Length: 271
Image: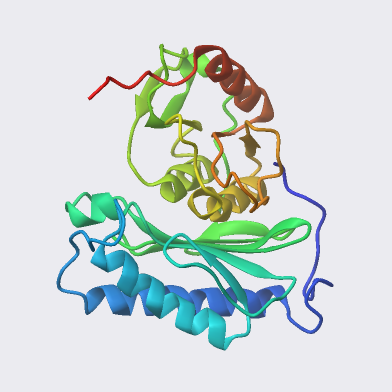
């Protein structure tokens, strides 16, 4: 995925709604998440489904309230599809990296991305630990707290610092790797040049709420994001998960994707 053509102000998919107005609503939703989390004393498992925490549910309820009141269709990791039936859908992970959050690991975020039939249109990723907000508008660039986002420009895998989700069956040839645990921030680090690339090696794949917001950050920063199942990144149909690669340059993204396709994920041990 690379940055598509510019679409200033009011994109035609939702008449009368501008990109800046959408971004403002996403900001309100993110602020509601932060307030809900501050008021949630127990961040442990919710007992609803594996991996869902009480903090996830509180954050989701707060965000959905804002987005639904704005008349937007919503697709959330925690509550599925809600809201109006419109041509603009906000894909949200209220707490990306909730396991990190529940264990006090300082790498988790709120990720929101408004998509239309052309793909990601407006995105916001809030690093809720460090208080850093990254935003992007299709064709208008991306920024983190007012500073423009720019990928590192790395083309050489042997010199690259690569973020991982899961492990490949063998070393793919990078200089160093990091496994940090929140895909929205991992891909955002590619957009900001802190990582040169990211590859999902989980075997399960990432869902749109994990990667869409940061994918637009990457596109507007000059980076490349690839879905390895060959479907469009903004395809919300089943199966919802797919492996994803992001890199500072198309050359690096395709080399990393090719090496991962040949290696595959590390097989899981039988219980």
